[in-house]
Image: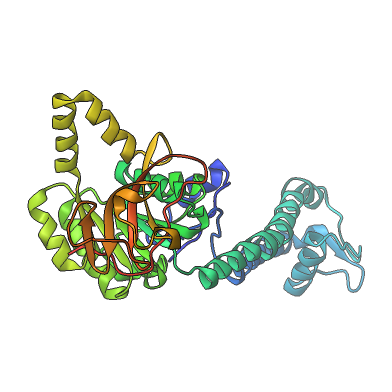
Length: 368
């Protein structure tokens, strides 16, 4: 069973949810089961209460009086149970013995309360709240387009989401996939849709609508898992940008062969930053500042404006690091750059401001 949840769920519902099977979609609130199934289950429980009440009355039929013929048969017992539990109470069949009246007080009255709770309370819940949540899930699925799928909600995944959201991406456009229910609970608490399950399985990625995603970030804990997720994601979506993180640098070529557009070696990157900080603490601080999106200095990619066409990268107002031309990334001092063209994109270093955003590029990543 695939199950849905949206943030704002109470603790009891979250604990009950832990017992359900995996591979569930979780949005910012929850839908437990299909409403028709919920109503059917409650009606079945109410029917059981009705049958139990009828047999209790029939077992003590000598303590009841029927105004019609004076005797109680099985049909009369079911009739009495029905009108009693529904609080109709016509009064044509009444308990006359002390035992029957005590049974009505201590057994049938609690059953009547239970019957009303099951039939009325939970049925209304299933027909209102749960129906609304299912409609919300279906609407989410039908409107989700060009979103970002993040596989893994650990430290790397959280940082990646923070960075892309700092560039203007709405939380509604992020779907998190993780095998841990606690990780997805944390993701939905932050306002992201989530799917609980193994991302190496195509049905799990389909639940995240990966075939309609614009970009996929793979931040798993294991390199072999990252390879399998990349293969599966690329098979489902040929056009999405896939960026993956690996621990070991020797696995980076394998990720690219599997379909990743860009591969980040987390261990090597952290090691290089450590080494740079030892050699020059100030340079290390600058690099760390560049990595943290939205604070201090930011590295952004933007298109060339008309006023910059025909100029060299050094003649622009921004500090240009590289020029993206076609499928190549050229350094600012590369002789092949020459002057800027209108179709170029610039990678620049700017002072972070609330309006600083990375302009999305719908083309394939220019990595080779």
